[in-house]
Image (cartoon, rainbow, N blue to C red; front, side, top):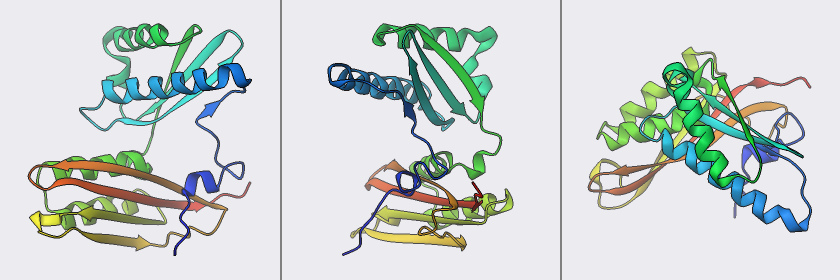
Length: 211
């Protein structure tokens, strides 16, 4: 039986870091964990119409919560004249226990971000685009953007089939067992009309990290 592990948690403290960075005692841990989850869900829900959010990092100090949003389209998050950030900050402060500061960081190459790639494929499947075409076009775009390798896997009732199955596309190499390998990984779900949920998994290999 295969022993599966998330490629990101496998590389923690090698060259990956936690998306939540804080330390809490027994009394505050559960409360802060729920707060972090609610903050991420709020950000994802607010921009759910288009896949723009790569990841949300939460860092806590004794008197401030810093929320860093990595996005492919900073202008969409910031809004006209900063109105989007101000509205988002007000919403987060309603659920947070401390004052909030929001930082926006732009993802320069969204084709190399597994979350954005997986959500892009999921949106295509929801629009009834052929799954093979969506996978191959996306894989080619990622390789053209400078990736060393990509692996895409979709599973479910593909092309309205009676029985669910799993299909995958691999371009280049994706060395999942090499700790130095910089792997971006994410999963997404497509609510395809008439066939239910189709799962999407994406691994992107960007090269080896020396540190």
